[in-house]
Image (cartoon, rainbow over all chains, first blue to last red; front, side, top):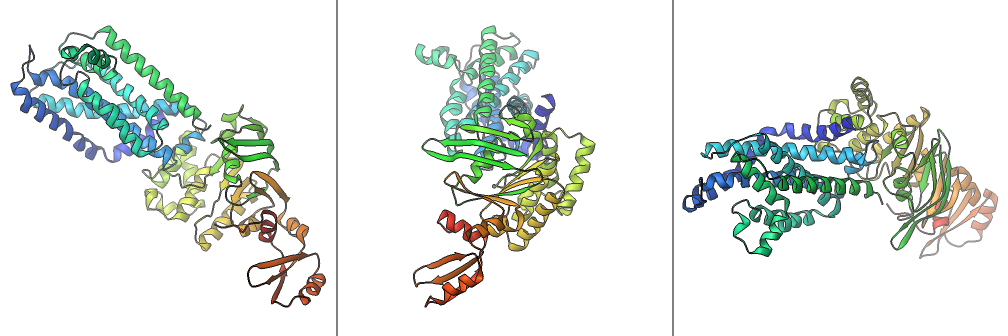
Length: 246
Length: 279
């Protein structure tokens, strides 16, 4: 099982290794835009109680960036390999379990999410943001990457075209990246909207990253909600890979 | 080696395979023929566990499907119709991935990859990405990949479709060589001459049903070894005879230009399925 997880991960790693420097370079663009637009531009005129707006949004940007990258690192290639290239069949006819395949893919998505987050964190420091990188922060970051890499497996296994994957991004990821406590706290929102936003995983990721970055630990409820999402997505993903042959 | 009994595959509104029974012997090269949509690919997909059967029993090398799935996966090699090589990887990496997925230890894996790249004459391109390969090269690499873990049965789904005649013949030689080494080969094909030249026995499927099963020669004999062909201006007609004298006698009664020739598998095919096969 562990060997098989490693094999699935290994394939993605050698592909990434070949373009690692280009990958890192391209990962610098969108964080830079966020930091400039929201940190420098808008942020100067926004009051957040304590600390600067930049310090407030950096954990939010880390959350949304790790979500997008982990999702897209797994989702699009897996969807293409199932629907267009049929390379998924090479794994399906191999004597490995569906769980090994799903976990290998999730780990490879997490790796890309982490590399991209590292780039972002270095840049945020360069922009003058102040936050603490501690074990809680890292654990939440890892879990967030895992949740969305697993969600990507679910989406890639259930949507039947590249266009639908794009729509999933537009209807699910894009709204979350703006609404889930990334750029503002949902406390100010009307009750129903707040309630809706608070059941989404990214809200908990943003809040947990923010409180741990401030050195205040993590709310157990956030940890529990995130762990539940992760387990649910992994389970559904494995079930879908098993069922793909029907 | 392969026993199929009462196999049924039902898709939402159509029956792709309708109570198929087949037995393929060890060391045999067996061909599945049939017009488009006859159920050839579906049969292979079920045997290679890419699709689940609706009903029926399948046994491969003593293992039952679906109970012994993992054991069967380890002893079959599959070359699908579709080019499904990983285009982000080189030729060698594609084989490496396959070897890892089949748990071949690293020393043996590397040795076997080098050996197989030589066997399919791709050694000089081993470090090139496969998206730079021609169709024939991709097909040979896919065969090498299917052989890497030393399978006992090789499934080839339309192995030579879309290839140049020269490349096709090279692949035939390769398949023959594999068979001489004791491998059981099950292939589907559209090309009648391919089945004729490679297969010991062929099964002709039509609309999911088995309509003929024998050696190519016996199928031709069953129809009549000689065929008289003539055109009536609209279509080509043919009639089969068991000896040349009878064929010549019949031809003499016709006013159109006639041809007398030996019957071939294509005649059997057209006679049985009533349609000309189109690639």
